[in-house]
Image (cartoon, rainbow, N blue to C red; front, side, top):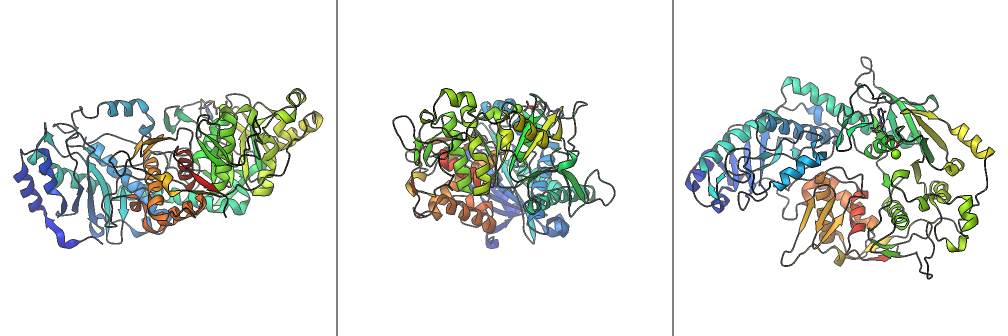
Length: 620
Ligand code: ADP
Ligand code: MG
């Protein structure tokens, strides 16, 4: 509960700012506290150490009577998460309109060039207001094309709150008190109110946004009942603007998705569908069935684009993303080869039996895994973490892991080939472990024999060619022999040792940072997440880093398996929200920093890539 006893009124903040005007920057520490403004309350939780440091962390809380958010917009968990995401975007738009802060419109976080320039400019750029360092900056952590649970906006029964970062104004290293007064008492409240208060036109947009997300989540919860692992709506636009932008491609070349008739399903959803007829609340599109699904087709005919959409489909998308009708089961995990990664005691023997020199692979360790061993470890770890399906693309797979054809079998005797290719295991994965696979494969027809469905892409259009593929396999079958030595078994549970999650560095007790989306600095080691492709937002990356730390502080006793830890973290997020990740928070609701919720698979992936990770195997 907020402690209202310490709330001051706005004139007190003005007085303090006047008092410290012209003094050294450290004097800004005096303005910490909470201040009641005419239409909102301002919480100054953390004050930056100098003008060039990470900006200060504030919250602006608006009473519900002022914000007037219609209750239907945030009734239930799904709508609440969606509306918070929407409001964060609305505040960001208001910031952009006011010409304050970095414009970070959706999609531009993939613009590496722009981000690189900003980061290089760090410490020397003139702030958006005049003044040194980050003077005058206002920023909120809103999302890209995906809709995620975020810490940026919180809705409570009586109020709604935006968590923002603000660069307190300075000239050199001196406090600019007047500027700060104007920023904190006028500009900031005005901007946040403009974002959080829904004018009637914004209400329609908010309702469409929330309904669109709710439809996606509805489809997700119904996939399993329909025997599907994913759904791609007719009319979806899958290709992206460019390799560096996650926005939809929109030019005349776009071929909207249309399901092959054999795979078409219609799913009723709770809300009207954009582009449908009036009151039409049905989504029609391609159901990707559980089992083994092969995506084939010539090079450049759209295979990887479809798979990418399925990868991202584990998250809801914003309206007009083009993929807002692409919905995957939340337990689908992209698998790729990732040579160089570390692997800690993973039982990869279903795929790779003993290595040269007779080394066992039942607790395989490597500081520098190969393409095939890394891909095997990625699969076993995903299944250990609870994956119900795997997404693989030939473009990012190790060839020797995927196939071993008849000629190679004839030349290289099985006794000298430790690899049992994925081809030999893919059906068993489904039959024995309930793990489906969607595999892009343009280069090897051996997979026709093991696929339940074959989808061919021709000029970006999908066709069901399951029967033809079977026929081809029958006619030109059978040179290669099955070589698997023993049946596949479920992964052995691993128990991380608490000591391996030490986040200290030198004299600092806690050093955890996200460097963009792809790297966490954890204690003295970086965690390389370039190969973890379903991590989509830098704020998820940051959350993953702190989730590992949280697990070590609160959840671990060496007895827990990795799966137990992931369960416990998810339960904490569900009950306490992302604020629980703030290592310095005391549950008082202060601005915890910028977090977006990661899935358990990405948390597991980061833990598995920790170079300090040590586990004990199999005491379940
Ligand atoms: P593949 O994996 O089959 O080689 P990709 O998925 O990489 O092909 O797609 C090749 C190119 O075609 C990409 O530039 C992609 O943006 C574009 N593309 C994919 N799907 C479509 C589509 N439905 N409409 C228009 N262009 C598309
Ligand atoms: Mg491809």
